Image (spheres, rainbow, N blue to C red):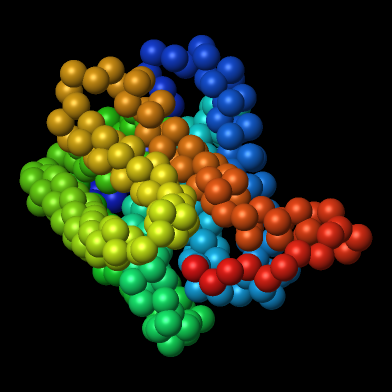
Length: 321
């Protein structure tokens, strides 16, 4: 009886995808393949930038930070889901559940700040090209990464503290493949309105602020592009922003849908919601390095040089911006 009324339960049970338990092994195959591909793609991007001194520039260093955030997001969620699918290892301690929840939301908030920093990078490169080197440096990238980490810590730690104060005395089964803030809070035998409001307002307030600043950056970028004298110059300037815009859509659209579906999507079948939530931690980490690798010539050429060896063709240095 004392265990039932304790403030922190010993364990939770992750049940996976409701109604699809018999298909867990088959579902794990594409999940595992997508995860391995994401690790390889982001690893190749990190290795390419690390091995090529010509890529030690703010734009590419920000890409490395984005790759690290993507790897944190997918690695926090997917291995646990695969263990559940393959070995039915759904039992997870309360501390481990909170840790997983923390790093999932932390990685999302860090990635949002990095995307904002990348928008600022494009803004300076296009609107103030002569001041690019003075404004954006390796030190500036390090400060942006530190700011992203500190903001993520400050925003997510209250979620952990709010959950630790709750009393759990009922079922401890979480209908999901990983621990999510409100999925844990709903199991509590207590008033969780504070958790619900904080969990709702936090991502929208911070995400809306980042999106607003990104929109302002792109408004100035479009104004600067419209003033360029030649059409090829305008096309080149817009092309440098294309990869970033694709990554923005890959990140913010699924994130907004997942947050809204978790709180208001009562008409959405649980299995659909959970599958989409898992794709959210798989597809952006996989597609982000591919988008930049395909659309950015400097990364594509340097990657070929790194992975084909010293006998490859000598490439000219990348153009700034």
